[in-house]
Amino acid sequence: MTVLLVHYHEIALKARNRPFFIKQLVHNLRRATADLPVRRIRNLTGRLLLELSEERSAGAVVDRIRQVFGVANCSPALRSPLTLEGMEETADRVLAGRSFQTFRVTARRANKAFPLTSQQINEALGDFVRKRFPVRVDLKNPELTLFIQILPKEAFLHLEKTPGPGGLPVGVAGRVVVLISGGIDSPVAAYRMMRRGCLVSFVHFHGAPFLDRRTQEKTREIVKLLTRFQYASRLTLVPFGELQQEIVVNVPAQYRVLLYRRLMARIAEHMAGLEGAKAIITGESLGQVASQTLENLTVTEEAVQLPVLRPLIGMDKEEISDQARGIGTYEISIQPDQDCCTLFVPRHPATRATVEEIARAELPLDIDRLVKIGVERAEMETFTFPEAS
Image (cartoon, rainbow, N blue to C red):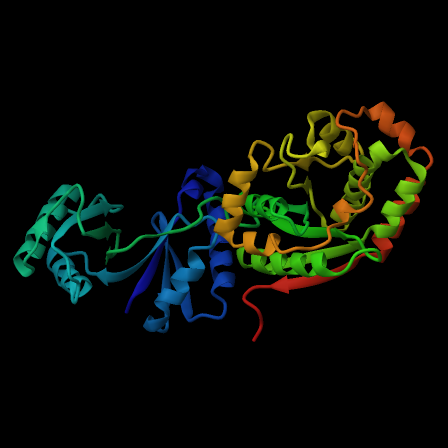
C-alpha cells in the first residue's frame, strides 16, 4: 500500500518548540484531507507519514497536502524492510512499468545505526537497478531519481517530490484581521500572513447603498478560495457608503481618502478585539498610490493602537500580480467592480499629510459614533474547507 511522506523544513529549526509546530501541522493536514481517505498520520524522524485507506486516492491527497503551509514536499512512497534485499525488492516494485534511460539513487539515513552508509546504499541499489533494467547511471541529469529514506524501524522508497508552499503551519502565530478588498493586493497580503502561521479574519468595506454588490461577491469568492489554506474563515462585511458621505460633507476634499482609511482602521480594530486578533493587515505597498506615501501611512496607523502590518510594503505591482496568479486570486480580482475606495475620491488627494492636519480635519466628525454605526451594521459570514457535503 502506498503511503505519503511529508517533509517539513522551517519547522525543523524550531528546537524546543518543534513539537508544538508539528502538532499544529498534523492538525492542519487532518483538516485539509478531512473528506479524503487518510486513515492515520504518524510522526516519524524528521517527517510525517500519512497512511491511506484507498491507494487510488493518493493523487488527490497529494494535491491537498501541497497547499498546506509548513509542508516542504510530499512523496508517495512504498515501505521496505530494513535490509538490502528488502530495499531491492521494493525498488523493483517502485520502478515497475517505468520507462527511463538514465537514473541515480539518492539515499538518506535518519538511522545512523544502519550498517551501510548512504553512499554504500546508493552503489548497491544502483548496481541492482542496472542489472534489472537496461539503463545507465547519470548523477547530474538523470531522467529518474530513486530516493531511499532509512529510518530507525523501516525504509521508504519513492520517485517523486511534490513541492509544498513551505512557511509555518496556520495557527502557530495567532490571529490577525486583514482589510480585504476585491482588488489584487490584499488577498496576497492575507496569503503571506497565513504562510507565516497566522489565522486570518477578513473585514471588507463596501460602498452600499451607493454602489452595487459586485465587489462583495468578488470578495466572497476570494475569501472562499483563500479558505483552502486555513480551512475556516470569517468575513465581516461593513457598509461604508453613508460613512464616507458624512466625511465628504464635513472635511476638506484632499483629506477624504486618509479619513476613510483611518475610519476603516478603527472599525477593523474593534472587529479585531471581538476576534481576539493581535494585528491589522493591509495590502498597501509603498508609493503605489497617493495614500501609500510614508507620511500618509504614518497618519493612517496613528488612528489605532494595534500594530498595522503590511506584508507587501516593498513589493511592486508586477511582483504582487505574479503571486496573485500563483495562488489563484488574480482572475477574480481583475473582474470589473465598484470599489468603495473609488467613491467620492477627490481630484487632488493629500500625499504628505501630517498628524496635526488630520486631527484638525477630523474635528467636525463624531468618530466614536461613526465607528459604532460601522460595527452595528456589519454582517458576518463563515466559510469552510473542505466544504460539508
